[in-house]
Length: 408
Image (tube, rainbow, N blue to C red; front, side, top):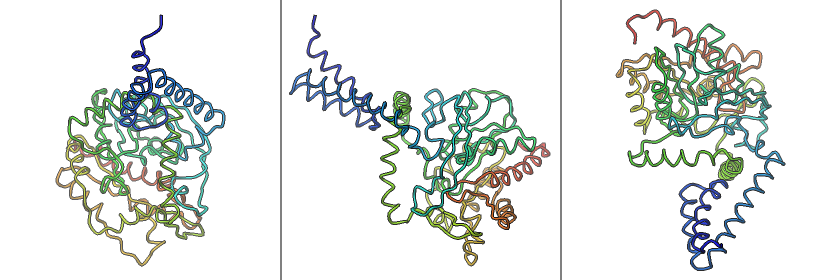
């Protein structure tokens, strides 16, 4: 018995969003496309609409097969963490896929793609995640300290043995890595979900990066409540599609095309000589370091106010340009707007805050004589040496916190 034509039309409409999501089309557009397919079914016939969508489904399958055969589904990512980033529907925030075990040679950092200058610094990267999708070798096991922050806590551009958690472990400090790229609202979400699922006396250490937390530029925003609820449900429903190679490759290609205009005019990256090498600096971070005052700090300020009662300490991570400015632009007097702003907030909310800049500058100066650095030359992120310098300072701070019985 043949199915009624309206059933075929309905099937075509129902298949439209998931197929288009698989191609990397935004959810709103994918859903709206169902109305277009409905119009085709009404005017051209349900069979024609179903054939059209069926053809798109076949094309999606061929696309995925071509990516796998060609290896483009792996080669498209220029930073290891992007292929594993996903939406964690259970906890309502972004994280990585759980149980990842990955090793590969990363050909260059995040700034090479933004400049035509040959600054690539290849490195071998091992990347592992726990069952919650955070970058740990094992699940949380009662570690007394929880590291909360963005890609600097994650250790983007670095191998597992060099990330902050590992460098702290080498100094006898047990800590759990609760970092993922984002902004202050994301950091708050990571910590709150951790609190809901874990009991104990773990104390969070918050790391704020001058480059995108002063002001917040890359993370979640503060939407109306109804929109936040809707967004959470949409993200949860579409998360499986975002893990498809077809989705990820398409979105990555669009992002690269969008960046080409800035690549052509060379505005995104400033390349300067330093100790016999060419070091790349992200122009946006250079501009931010030079700003005499801050604007649009509402998100960071509000998130810190809510987190303050829980925080054991806050650490300020400077940009690469701030650390190396004494050598690449010795005549320049950089303002200190971001750190001063954080100091004022910490005083207001009675939280202990610490600036990692002096420790990183000292380590950088010690390494320059041998042509070594605390940042990757082709990246906005610190390398193992920079992380080690930060870890040494964090250990010093933690020893004072443990010695202070009156501290939260």
